[in-house]
Length: 104
Image (cartoon, rainbow, N blue to C red):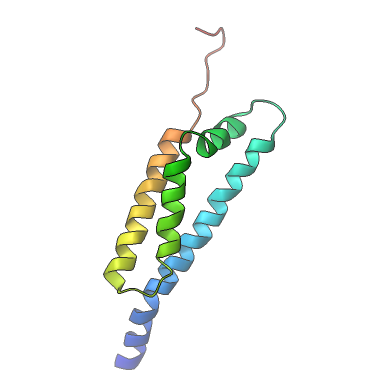
């Protein structure tokens, strides 16, 4: 069992990085909203991510990609934590607030 646990523990950084990469790919699909014809909330969020928040979004992608480099588990965990914190920040900064009817 020690061999199995050792192998499982050594695979954890790779599994965590793979899950983060899959999540990043799903989130990147939200950028497809930039092609909408009208000014939908999805288009406005996508343009915000591609414009003013481009550096933050790039830093998040870089953190997830760097987690694929074979590093010690604490380094991978740190990179993934940074990526998740940046993702949380992007979520709250890029969301488009619904507007009230009447336009105040």
